[in-house]
Amino acid sequence: MPATFDWDNAEEIGIQLSEKFPDLDPLAVRFTDLHKWVTELAGFCGDPKMSNEGKLEAIQMAWLEEFKDRQG
Image (cartoon, rainbow, N blue to C red; front, side, top):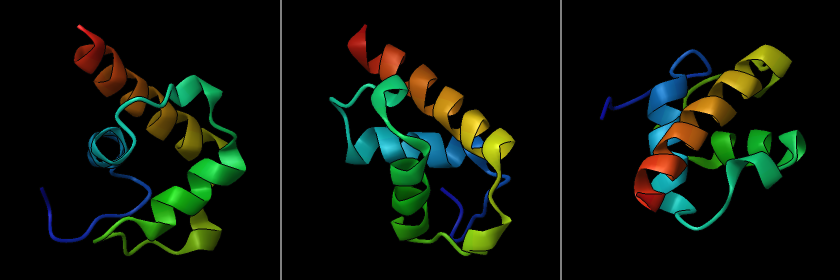
């Protein structure tokens, strides 16, 4: 795990969100909540204003892959 990361580290963010919310289906999360949760992660150093729909979608898809892996 990198010490710090930003919006371009979708895979790392997906892993951390999966660990923080193991039973939550990423597809059920609103982007407003996703944005808030990402900015609250330990080590996140990105500018909250620099996110966009594409970056949030990439994070959601990375989180979904982790979610599926955990479900078996």
